[in-house]
Structures are given as structure tokens and as C-alpha cells.
Image (cartoon, rainbow, N blue to C red; front, side):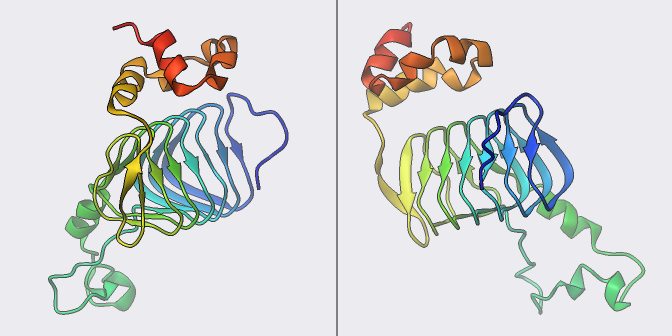
Length: 207
């Protein structure tokens, strides 16, 4: 559910949001039922709802559909058991302290989502993966490897479907970096965002 009221520099946060160690940019919207931990969320980005995001750095103008999961924490796979009693030791009375080294390792597995990315419904982005600028992740995809800029991926595990644009256009968009423009600049130049991508990069690529 996306709000119909005008957004502004203050984040629009819907009901049932739980966040710990989060940094949220301007002109953003967080849909209902979001649980975040250790997240940096860029300007103009939004989630549609029912999202869990952990240990992630998310760029500007990122489009996150409902049910997307970013950075689901791993279990220790090299121990005799996968169960969390080996690191959440206190709640079971197995030790006076939890496994702080393991928790520190999980926190360090940062998932990076570039600018102007679209993550489809129920997609899962695994810890440590990097999604390039302008990429599209299909619905219900499970992304286990880095995704190059302006690339469409889908499936389980996610595989490349195609590039969105030619190599020349992608290179020019990467140089233009319009996603770093100010609100005022984008508002002034808004009609140009309705041009074809070829006309847009021809107008704004200075090299």
C-alpha cells in the first residue's frame, strides 16, 4: 500500500515498522510490516510492505516490492548442528554469553543494492551480494551472486535474462549519475525523464 499524500523530506513510515540501527534518507516511504536491522536506506527509495532487511546498504530511487527479503542471516553450516542454540546460547542456558564472534561475522555480510534498482515481489537477496545500478530482479528470484548494472535477472538461483540497454547507453548512464541529482534539479528537468533513454543520455552525457 503506497500513500497518496505528497511525500517530503521526512520519511513516510507506515504501521508496524521495527528498525534497529537504521539510517533513512529523504523523500522515502516504508510500507507496512517492515523489520529492519543495520540498514542504510537512500533518498527516494521505497518498500511496498512486508519486507525484512538486514545488514544492507540501499541506494537512491530503489523500488522494493512487497515480500522482498534482503540479507537473510546465515546459520553456521560447519558445525554439528545448524540450530541457533550454538550461538544464541543464553536463552537455552548453555552458556553465560552468546557467540559474539558469529554475530559479528553475520553483521559484516553487507548486501549492497545500487541506485534505481527494482526488486520484484518476494525476491530474496542473499547476504554479501551486490546489485548494480539500474538492475532488475524478477519476482521470487533468489539472488546468490552479484548482479551487473542494468541487468535483468530471474529464477532460482537467479540467472541473467538480458541487459536493459546497449553497452554504450549503460556506460553513459553510469557517467551521468542522475540518481545523485538534487530534488530541485530533477523537478526542473522532469520532462526529460519522459524522453527515450537514448535521447536522455545524448542530452546529458558530457563526454
